[in-house]
Amino acid sequence: MAEQDVSAGQLLLAEYQSVKDEQKARIGFRDNLLYVTLAVVAAVIAAAAQAEQASMLLALPPVCVVLGWTYLVNDEKISAVGRYVRQELGPRLAELAGTEAAFRWETYHRGGPGRTSRKVVQCVVDLLAFCVVPTAALVVYWGGGQVSAGLLVLSLAEAGAVAGLGVFVVRYALPFGGGGE
Image (cartoon, rainbow, N blue to C red; front, side, top):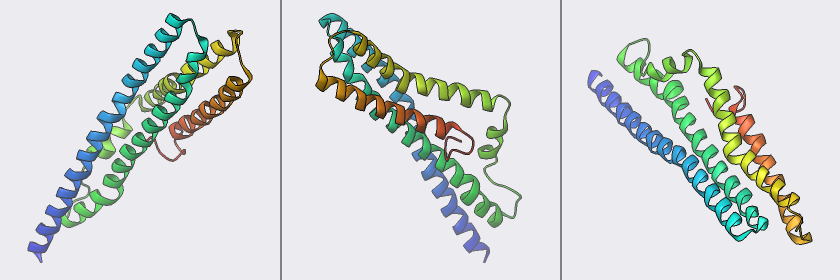
């Protein structure tokens, strides 16, 4: 029986390593999305200013929505790995090892001081990067004076998509919002 416990424990540790590797890769990808967003925003603003075409700013909302949604999806998967380790993998390994808990860091770091303020600041940063910037681009376009009917309809649809993303960003950041732990 003890040999089976060791084998099961080794499998659980291998699974832990696998999900933590996935989490690490997703964290790197997610964090780079902010840099990509900043680079795209700078490039589009520079091109629009150079060409003196405010309509070029209409490229920002769809790009920011796609990158923002990708950011949120990856952030949710990162949190899901943490939940899985805390709620499933850790308790199973602790039971096999006959200890009170396994992978305590997965719980410990979540209770540290300043967690709520960090979550609020991250929500603000996410909203700025993925929602406020494209909304500002739309406002500049609308205020530019050369608004065509077709691009007005497109820009209104883009505004709806940005607002929808904003709702998801805020919902995800809330403690009961379904993610963003």
